[in-house]
Length: 328
Image (cartoon, rainbow, N blue to C red):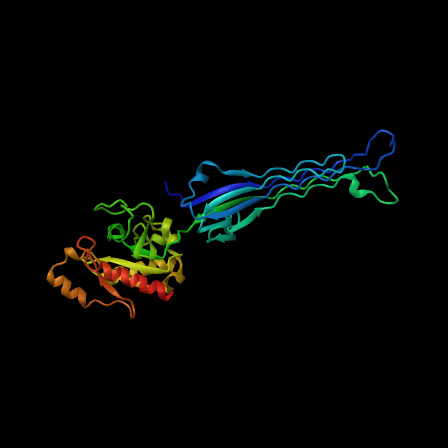
């Protein structure tokens, strides 16, 4: 199951208390203070792991605690430090304060991490308070509490190319032809219910990742259809491929609608290089093919006619994807 949002509560460990203790040994009736300090509490650390692809684990576990520090002991022994708790999340996870929606961190690269809640400090034992005027202090301090917070995870997939289009535009079929991904394919809208990633092997040592997103509809940025749930995944892609069916009554209007939905969600996405793919060309008759050849959209945006069924235009499309990625 693909889960791309989760909310959890984290609590770092409390610091251990310092203690009041005096040295007690035979033949030493008035030993000095030897109360040890408390150990620091463990912290909560969040770390990016590229082996993970979903936030599903957080659906079943919502609370995470680090270990408390041990209390100090006699003979000037400091309590043991509490163990840290490391929470692993997929690379590409955004961390926000669940109460304020404030951005805390964006963990993009493998191994990146953040201390989300610091462990409490250990308290001081009475040995720390000994002075020349007070050689037998009878005071110690308690450890401080560990930090706690409710945080929200939001996963944004890491892909090079994002396929954008209306439902049933042929995105899933395309990704199944140019990569090893095997998404569900059927002749009805919203076949794709989750993003699919496919690795395209451009040559022996060159490859890139393509993301097939659930189809957009007008109003997706407001929550209509399935688009709003996955628009965030397009934000990280470096190239956008707009896919429009050849039999669409007005391809330019459909393109403008798709562009507008992206703009209303996040205007910066339109700064990415674009390719327009006219899909399902195996369904076009000679007259339609002739009229589509004259079709232009915006300056410097290539328009490529493709058919995932016959293979028409697929090599040209993949070549163009690679060229635009290399220019970035």
